[in-house]
Amino acid sequence: LPLPELAARAAEVPRTRPVVVYCQSGVRSAQAVALLQGLGYDNVLTLSGGLEEF
Image (cartoon, rainbow, N blue to C red; front, side, top):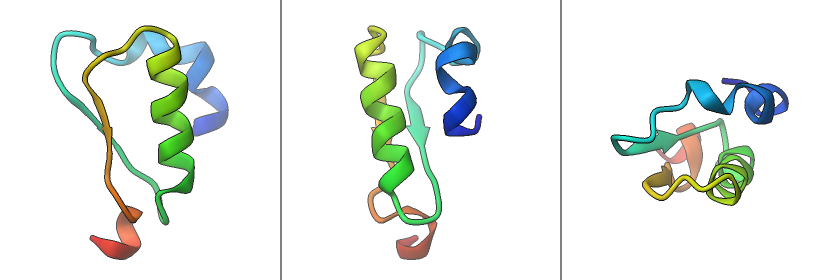
């Protein structure tokens, strides 16, 4: 999900299994993890360094 849509579409993100969030550099994915954690998601991780480091 694109970061600008994430808050409105967070219900689509599963709560029952781990979720790995990624973006090009890791900046937006870190923001997405913070947003999801703020909404009560516990098992959310970011791909450190994004796709550039992958």
